[in-house]
Image (cartoon, rainbow, N blue to C red; front, side, top):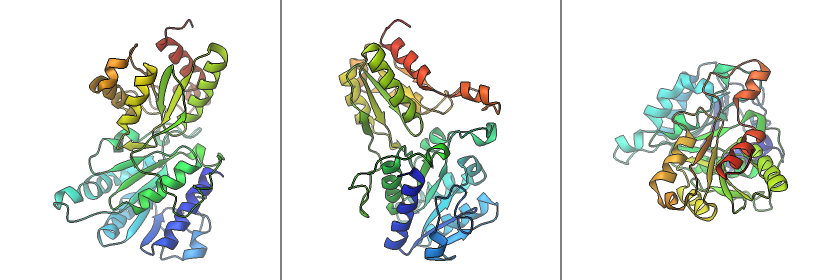
Length: 330
C-alpha cells in the first residue's frame, strides 16, 4: 500500500470514528489534496469537515487552534512544512504552550501535518527539514513516519491525542508502497507516540534514522553485509519528540557503535541530540568509537540537480561512515 493511501485511510477512519475531526488547508477539498492524501474525503464528508482555505497559513492555522480550544479536533495541513513558518506563532506559542499556561486545565487537540524535508528540484525555500525545529518545543509531540504502517498508525495516534502533534511526512515517500500487516489494516491500529522500531537487527553497529533516510540506511546495511560482513542494526525513530532513548541505549549496548543519519542541517539537529544521548546515558560506557553523524550539507539546498544530490545523505556516504566508525579500510 502506498504511503498516501495509508494516510488517506487513517483520515477516513478517524472522520468516521469522531465527528469532531475535520481537515483544513490549501487544496485539501476540491482538488483532493496537493498530493492526493485527502482524495475522496470531500465527497464522503462534505465541505463542513473538509475545508479549502486561501493561501494564508497564519489565518487557517490560527482558526484551527481556536477550533481545537473550542472542543473540535482539527487536522491542519500545510502544503509543505516550509510554509508553516508563516504560522509558527500559532504552533509554538498558542497550541504548544496552552496546557502548561492554563495549569493543565485547557487542552489543544490539534494535528499539524504535511510533507517535510527535501523533495526534488524545489530549491532552498522548499527543502528544509523541521524535525529539530519542532522537536525542540516543550508541549509538542513530533512524529516522522517512514513506511505505510508508520503513516497510518502515527496519524491515527496523533488525531486521538489530547494535545498538539506535528506529523512530518515526506513528499517523495507518498507514492512508495510498503506491505501492511493484517493488524495494520484494522480500524483500531495505532502506533504509540514515543516508541521507535528496529527495522533490521544487527550486532556490529547501530544506525539511527527516520523518514526517507531509512531507505538509504537499509540499502547501506545490505551493501555492508554483502561486501564486508558487517551486521547493522537500524532503528526507525518514528517519534522525534518524545525520543525513544531506551531503544537507542539498548542497541548501543549490543553493538558498541552508533551512527545517526538525517536529512536535516548538521548544527543543533536530531543527530546532535542523539550524540548527546550517547554522552549523557549509560550508552557512553559501551561505545568503542566516537558517535558519527550524517546530515545534509550545511548550506541552503541547491536547485541544480547535481548539487542537490550531493547535499543529502545517500547509501554510499552511509557505507563510508559506518566502515570508518568500525575502523575498516576504505
